Length: 296
Image (cartoon, rainbow, N blue to C red; front, side, top):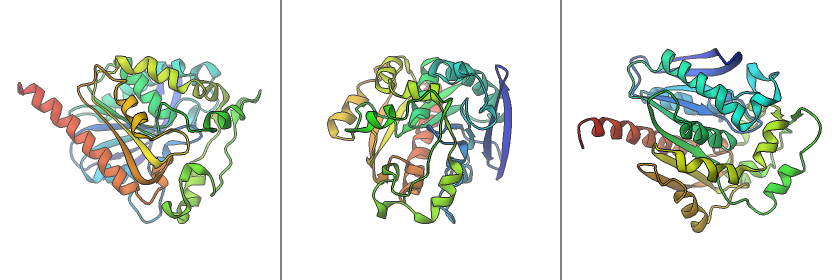
């Protein structure tokens, strides 16, 4: 397995990330996008002593590029226009083509993975029909119906400042009930935090409307995972069914609830169970492409 920090340029924006790759040709290339106030490190450095998502995927034969979205990592100082929803899609379409060219050789195609706002961006990328062989898109912590008080929490952070500075709090509802996440992961989680561009926060406030806008144009398989104890999105049976109905053009849609977890699934004790389900979806998307090529 190879693991390294990477850097690439897209539309004159320099993006940073983490590459994990198996020793041989990968079965598929996973491009993972973190949520708001988080860097790509969240996919690689969570619970000490346990394999991360990057490690788990590479060990099972997939290449993973966890990418800092525009406004994070090396691109933290870019203009506000690049950090809006449309601005990020424009940059990431170019970045995705570059990532595929560099790291996708020998694989069946790309699966996009995204957390929270990164999941909405992943769906927006899929809806834009990027110039790569897109196998599927999987989101976690990306929902449609706000939990009571969740929208108001985001609204309260609006300001004239260019960034929202995150404050790590072990009592944050994002991590779920106290017994369901690893306290020893606190240091790693804190190192994964980064300021959120204020322009991105304004886009977050219109999250459900944007999701309804892009979903009908997604033509790849979709998986959406919400945590049992999600502090942002409703996870009732009705809310999950409403999500499923958003994607009329997707070949198949799986919407599920991850037990024993909060909004930040990578920090939960159920993280490994979550990773394996993510990768099972990636494998199903890979098999679907192979089967369709054989006339199945």
